[in-house]
Length: 214
Image (cartoon, rainbow, N blue to C red; front, side, top):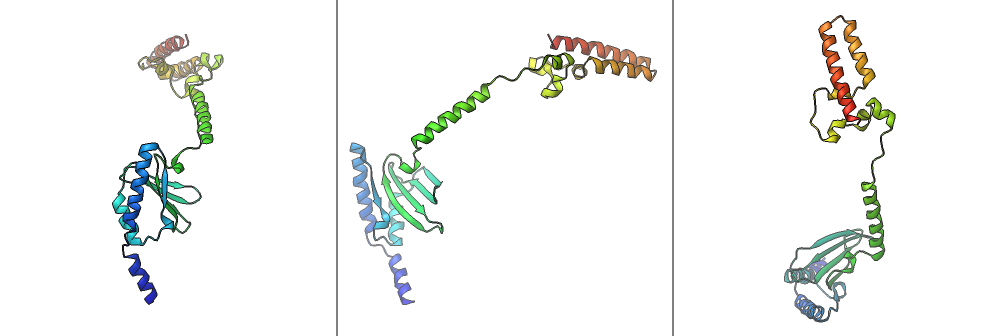
């Protein structure tokens, strides 16, 4: 038990390592700015206490970019308050830190797309665009004559042509045979007024149908 207490005290104590690491990061960042030469500091190889790590995070701060990745385990990447300085942490299955480093570079390699993935993405996007731009299959002639294509396509022809909806458009979608049955059905009930009205509707609908099929 006393041994654990001593370890806890050490973890809560700063050793000055955070300041040393920050100074090294500053030298690497100057080299990157001057010559484009990247660098890195392996934090797991240094005798950092938990207090040192917290102090180092406070000294470097947080920038605007953060990424969480699932690649053979979970990885956390964030840019510090200093552009070009990245904190990269890889976690094991139990969420314990497996590796940790500060990378000094424009963009960490783990965030860069592989050239093979880029080529595959270009091919897939080209195929998707070709599919979106492919013309629709033509409606068979016999379906256009009957007016059934409106029901099959799920939208009336007048909507596709951009003209306003007219009262008899729904009747025109029935087709000539259905309209004939509609008029004859009214006659079977002996309603002469209904016959006149249905005949007028049928005549108007047939005119609309003829116009749409031109």
